[in-house]
Length: 298
Image: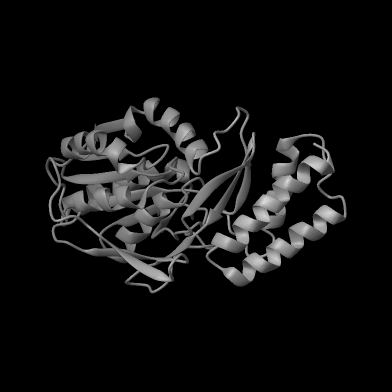
């Protein structure tokens, strides 16, 4: 990609930053950085994938916001806002039994529900998640495996939490730059199927690949004292984002809000969700199973 082709991508990206990024002051600094790097010839590269790598590194250089990216897509991306992201995650949805690829009963009446690779949009995922969580609701203890979950829909976070609590509960508050407004997220008063409920032992597995909405699920349950998080610290992305096509193979993702937990008053941005029981992620299932058996025996 030549500089002539790079310039429109940088122009579009800087415009999206200044119009939508949840931190306006940071947006101005980043926009100036991208324009300077363009003028210096830093983006005079041969292909879109290399441009995406360079621009993403610059976008994350100020506050290490992992949701702030220029994403490369091998296949051409549709021009409508969010269409590129939705097309990609729909393929993952169809290949993962709707985001609940594993439900298993371990020794001692302990169930495992793996939620991966995403917490898909609720209008897609409500049926498969209800089936998985209802099946597991009869278990004596439950392990939710988020080690391979890279994020998704905050409404789906609330839906899953609703199966794991007994009463309507304030889970999270999202501040949105647009309109300078806040929006609360609560568990639901009713769920289809059966609830696991809010009293039986609950464990959440996490690791370095756990990201975004999956981190919110772990963090919300941890802060409420409802679940024990087992494994490794997560990646640390608490800013929901939108995606805009800025080139036939490039999508700019810009965070438009930030999470504020009602218990901690903050979120997991940059630090990740810290496990209550640290251990290698590969060992976390065995560790959580042992913890559940010990608690059930007590």
